[in-house]
Amino acid sequence: MDKKIIVAIDGHSSCGKSTMAKALAREVGYIYIDTGAMYRGVTLAALRAGLIDAEHIDEVGLEALLPQLRLSFRLNADGLPELYLGDERVEQEIRTMRVSNFVSPISAIPAVREALTKEQQRMGANKGVVMDGRDIGTNVFPEAELKIFVTADPKVRAQRRLLELREKGDNMTTLEEVLANVESRDYADSHRAVSPLRQAEDAVVLDNTHLTHQQQSQKLSELFAQAVERLG
Image 1 (cartoon, rainbow, N blue to C red):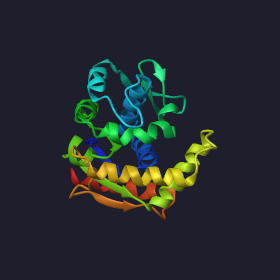
Image 2 (cartoon, rainbow, N blue to C red; image 1 turned 180 degrees about the vertical axis):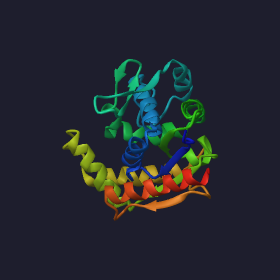
Image 3 (cartoon, one colour; image 1 turned 90 degrees about the horizontal axis):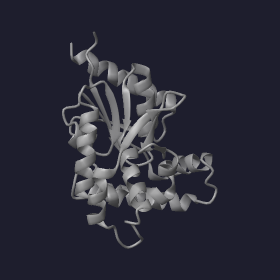
C-alpha cells in the first residue's frame, strides 16, 4: 500500500491555492481541506451574532461562541467539499466581500487560531490530505512531507478574485476594492502576532502569476511524485 503524506499549501490570498489543492487532491485520491473556508465560517458566524462592526470585534463574545460552532465539510454532487455551519451550507456566503473584509482580523485572534488549528490537526492526523491556508507548513503541520508556498502579483490576484465574484453574481464590487482588500489582507496576514503568513524554510516556492491551471497542476503532480518517492 502506498505511503500517504501531508501536502501543505500556503500562500497569499486569492493566489489560486484552493484551485490547485482541489485538483491535486482529486488526482491522487486525497482528502482536501480548505482551512481558509473554516476561518471564513467563523467570520460569518461572528457577523451574524453581531460581534463585528467597522470599529470593533467582540473577542470575549467570539471566544464564548467558538465552542458552539459546528464547522464541517460535505461533498457536493461533483465530489467537492463545501463548508457547512451546523446543517446550513454556507459555501457561497463565506466567499462574499462582506466576509472577506473581516476574515483577516478574525484570523488573528489567538483563541480562533488555537481552536481551528486543533481541528485541522485532527482532520489531518491520518495523513492522505492536501490542506491549504496561511500557516499549514509552519504551524499546523510543520512535519508535512511536501510544503508549497504559492504567490502571485497582487493585481493578478485581484483580477482573479473579481472574476470569481462576477461568476457568483456580484456585479457591484470594483477591481479597486478587491485590490485594496488583497493588499490589506497580505499585510494583516504577514504581520499578525500569532502564526503569521511566512514561507517555511523547506517549502517549494511557486509563483503562478504567469502560469496556466494546467501548468500549475503539472508542477504540483511532479512535486507530489517526488515527495512520495523520497519516502522509499
